[in-house]
Image (cartoon, rainbow, N blue to C red):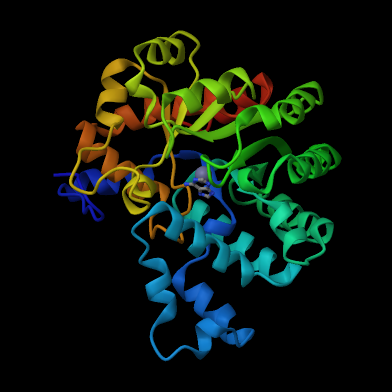
Length: 341
Ligand code: ADE
Ligand code: ZN
């Protein structure tokens, strides 16, 4: 069964075929790509309490079972990124992982307000990571950035994030997103920021329906005019919302491993993607935080293949559809179309 934390694909031939198919990832957080061993390295470099601990504090941190504990682990990871160079190295290794999986295009979420909150020169970090991805795109995947903001930190930092997104739009920033604790601040407090983002030609994503119910997805659509919903696993509770998502071709960024590991889907329950697919809700497959969840886009494909009984050609179709939801111009889309079998 495809429940629980770990899945190994039972059909090795299928695994090989999936690995070779060109991929697109639309929802991967830079900070959440930090692996246990990368965190150990940083903990040692900065002699932090994690390094000084007598127990394997890093393994314990990554063994979260609940959403609040996940958010705490995320925060601790971010507290270990202390220089622009740390961010650049992390960007480089994420880009390499994407390339290794035959990813031709990815939208990476990055939260610059974390830098300013933790005393780093945010603009220096932004410029360094954008430059790193521009260099990589000559030989690796093409990258667009989505600047994420932390809901519980309120609208002021969201305004600041928008300012950065506008300033660096020409350097590969395609949109803004809201994440963090979905239950903390109502969507309406961010309405004006998202409205201004739209006016500036930036795209909009919202984490919604992950820990809160279908109403939160409606608010992301109505208040924030979100073009994609991250997770949205509670959307199925509301038949009118399902109709809306299907009718408007508004996709969910589905992240299966993420949902089990943060406990928002019970480990012994089936993942709602089965019912989403049956209802015709548009969706894409994503790793969310591959370091924290010890996953990859390829592993997400393998899990989906098991749950949905998909064959390789269905993943080619998925990739074509994913391209339609990417924050690209139609000309750029045509170019990527040629790279997808
Ligand atoms: N930031 C990174 N991953 C997240 C998730 N799964 N939910 C909310 N915010 C996040
Ligand atoms: Zn996310």
